[in-house]
Length: 333
Picture 1 (cartoon, rainbow, N blue to C red):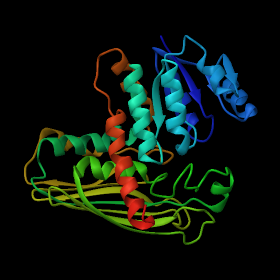
Picture 2: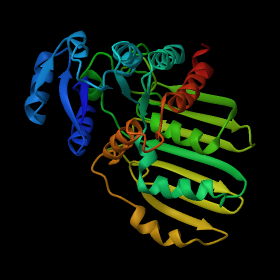
Picture 3: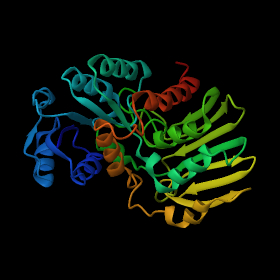
């Protein structure tokens, strides 16, 4: 039985607690949050035997095999490094940091300490995306010409006001770094190595440091063009989280609120699994989808030597590199 400690009992932690509870060979034995009431409530709700507001105290629990980091994005490297230095494997929510140099230090520390590092990019496990990935890896698109992703969501001012770190450059970043990070990952996952990035961002309405709206254009080394369009100002609710791939011999569009529904699937050839397109579409209740449970299953199987990781530190670094390039273009840093 793998023993897990979780730090950060805020908005995203519910997905982690529920995903851990769904595993037969893992259990959450401790949780931590700087707000004691939040940690206590999580422990009571999910039947966790130990809670604390001291991360150092939790890390001293020897039986913990790995730590799930669900704190603000800017703290992921620091908290991951602390776990690694205590000999714990690390699973960190996306993005793995908001500054590449700090993420690199996390990767370096985990390697030096001989522990594994996982980055939660669970949308890679969406049934619709898995089917798309299969077609991609089989070369069914031929030459890819364009990859486009739209993230048309809404986050009211009340969302940002709930926590002082939200929308800040130090701990969060803006719509690209936070809400659209899965989509940035998806575009680079299918596009490959990147040659050039151009971007425009704006803070049109929300009272935050970072952007609530933006667009990025990418030239991949294979010649394809990518674009990512993001806003948190969609009226009146989340509308679309999509990826479209246009190729020489195939066109696919996956949309819904979280890349969960295949809207167009057409290739020059046919395969048996083309009949699975309708079954691959899902209807999640939120933009988080259903991927956390599958992600934990993969982590546990990796630790058991049964599988390769869906997304480890070096793989998670790729989308953070692209995010930093998007911001470098608009912030000159």
